Image 1 (cartoon, rainbow, N blue to C red):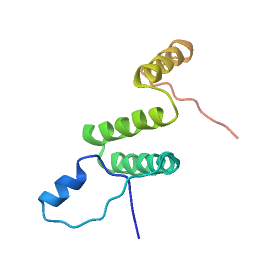
Image 2: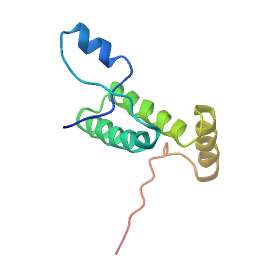
Image 3: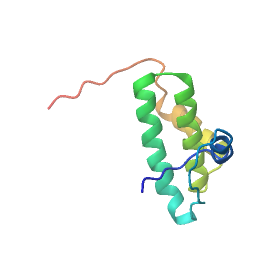
Image 4: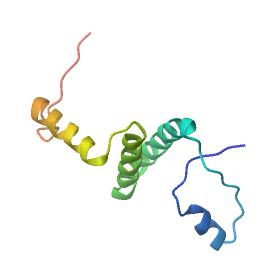
Length: 100
């Protein structure tokens, strides 16, 4: 049986649409792997569509991944800020050529 992590309101939404699915709650042990799978799914969808909604889905998953490994949103953005200060961001569009 195929299963995937879905947003919290999906059981109610699908029921209201008359669709029948079985749902269960992931264990703490399962959650990290489910979020990693979800990140891959959402990244693939963004690569196909290149739209803001898919990008927001990726961010939602990343924030949940951070929480899963014990980092809250503020801490994650602080880590990002420090790394940007140290190494820069990507705004200058610099591309490094890799030669064999």
